[in-house]
Each structure stands twice: as structure tokens, then as C-alpha cells.
Length: 117
Image 1 (cartoon, rainbow, N blue to C red):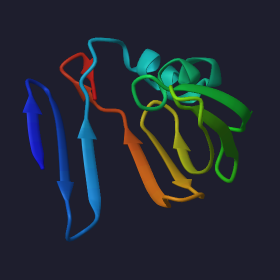
Image 2 (image 1 turned 180 degrees about the horizontal axis):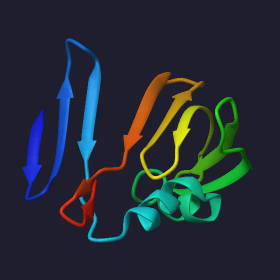
Image 3 (image 1 turned 120 degrees about the horizontal axis):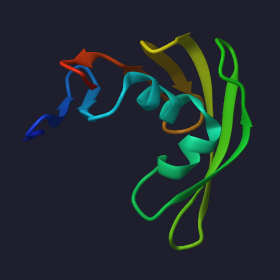
């Protein structure tokens, strides 16, 4: 599936089991990075539409964990645990989702003519 919406795109590759999601924000890089690295900011946007998120533990460093519960709009709770693999300030965050479904995610923060990806 490939979708392009102006500067935002979503792509999947079945053979390599990769999903690439790109979002461009008209905001300073430090603000976008803070949205990913400060627990109080993550809880405002993390999860599918209609869900809320409650953090139980947030230790942003390699080997640190983020334990949280995503609360579905139907009242069902989904416990989650991520382990941070790499954190490079203003550049990259890599984490492993250690509960089903298992995956490795990389968030890359790039300058795109004063906008950030």
C-alpha cells in the first residue's frame, strides 16, 4: 500500500515486513523531538484515534523502558512495553515493542527546509 498526501506518506513492503510512515511538521525540530521524548507529550497523541494512553514507567535511555496502557474507546485496555535501543537527541529514537505484536521502530528527525520529518 502506498499513499501520498502532499508531504506525508505511508508505505509498506510485505517482503521485508517494513512499514514506513513519513510526516512533515511545520515546527522546530526540538519541539517535534519533545513530542516523542517527554512522557507528558506522548500521552497526548500516542495511539489510534479515539484511544488514550496512560504511562506507568518512562525511562528514555538505551535499555530503558516505556510501559503504558492504551485505553480503547470501547473500554478495553491494551498494556504495552517498549525498550529503548538508541536515543540520539534531535536525530533518532529506536525502540523494541516487547509485547505482541513484536516490532522494532525507528523514528528519524530530519530537517526538510525548516520543516521536520
